[in-house]
Image 1 (cartoon, chains in turn orange, yellow):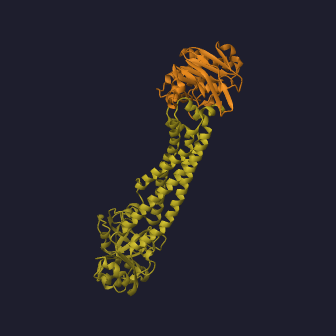
Image 2 (tube, chains in turn green, yellow):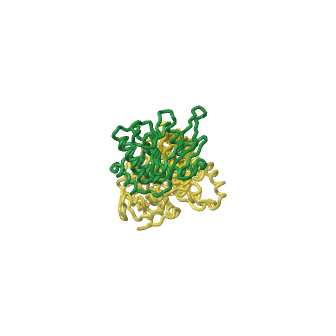
Image 3 (spheres, each protein chain N blue to C red):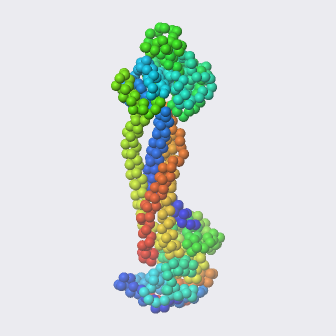
Length: 208
Length: 406
């Protein structure tokens, strides 16, 4: 589970953001909707501990992570947070399989090939595991990045515009898979988007 | 999955860049290593044959030429000197041994040297089969000559005049192989040794076509007055000889005296200039290789900024990624080193073949030199340095901004 209180952030004193409080328990989903420039990505990076807030608190799996030092943060992120970015990016020189295993490797956990294969089958790209990532279509790439985010069974899954570059068909598929897989591991799923197609898919919504 | 695997994959992904960096390193390291090898082996070859020879006397001319022709058998002789004058040296109290040499003929490019039994003795050449030459027209051949020309005991051959195969044949008189030397690693291996009288006989015969029966050791002494030799190798009894004798000879006789150690040092200091120039060139190539590694890593880091931020966002530490990039430089250095050392051996092999053909000398030491271990450390240092400079950027990378920019 993840929650935040009175989060504030500003970029070099010019752009100032004050964010509404967020709360997403285990096994729950939350949609954060907002137009561009409202600080969606900033909020997601704050929740993902990629940015430090100016003020306010974030609680992740019961820990008050705003007090963590940088190595604790790296650790907490690797183990408890799975991030899916707007455009899927990979280590382009290694295979799809290796890209998925990277999550395990950098989190200092055992590299679980079976799980990678299982997820690839669930997400429907098992036949592409030995390919390079740039040989895959965007929809497939986004599904690979979901698998990568799931590898460490994180407590929280954060998705930044996961569907914005996908057509309706792929959009449905990706969002269904996200919901299904995060429910399977009992994670909180937080999706940040301006994509109006997702409006009806989530019960809990926050507007920026 | 680990950083080593990613580094390797990155090198493979940028094949041309990696190839260029490795190629430059290979060239530079190969050149330096080849120079080390050649320098060491030429030095060894030259010093091995010089051992125990304090002075060479021969006809006046270039002292270096006299040394090269008389000791190493690679240059033309300076001319002839009367045997009588050489023999007076034997009576000098400073002189321990005098080994007269008489050259001028060859068989299939291998020199036939007329001398006494002291010559093989000096080089510790043992007769492997047969016996040492005694009679005129008897020869004992060096191990390499026997092997390459396939000479066996009892074989006969006609020599050619001059020092290369194109010379006029002495067809009427044939040499007979009576013995074969064991391999010594010295100049004897590539020579055909015979008695002094054989050389005189064959030339008298060729020049005057007269006096058919003059081939015993006795006649050698009788005809001492007119006899000539090409040069003589001298050993001193004590170092005092070195101070007085050369000047005496140069001033009071028709001969010149040359000191091998001085001439060879002179030769090497001349060669040294060339070697230093090549070494400097190799250093420049290696530096360019370093720059190439630097540029290719710098560019690839710029391209892979997002990849780096991504890896940082899934739990990689900056230090780990820094090492990953260092590994790329290190691997290039190792590849360049191994390829360079291999190439230098190939170069040495080619050089050896060429030297073998022209001078009958061969260089055959292919083991790793101590200098090459320092070369390895230097290559690693260059790889590390060239990789470290651009890779330090990983510590300044702003994860959030990089990820948000795409």
